Length: 92
Image 1: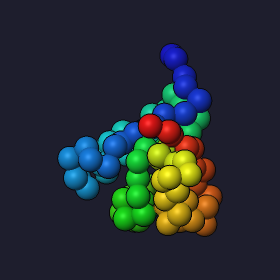
Image 2: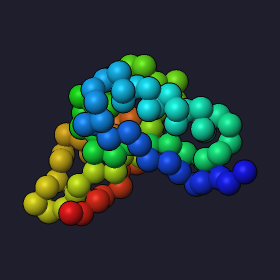
Image 3: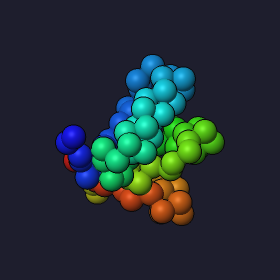
């Protein structure tokens, strides 16, 4: 079996709350099977994270977002920091 150190998913535009939760449940299953060490999200804003945290059994370890001097996303960064979700910058 191949294992990964982390897995990123789902994209917030991936079909609405039900599909995001379905994708997240799949990642939680992969994590519980030991096929990866951490799971996270990409491009989640505060309202996406609140929605996910309300239903997730395992919180995301990381949120990969566009982050640079011209796009600082202070609300998302503060939300993640308060909940110990690592922010990984992704430049366009």
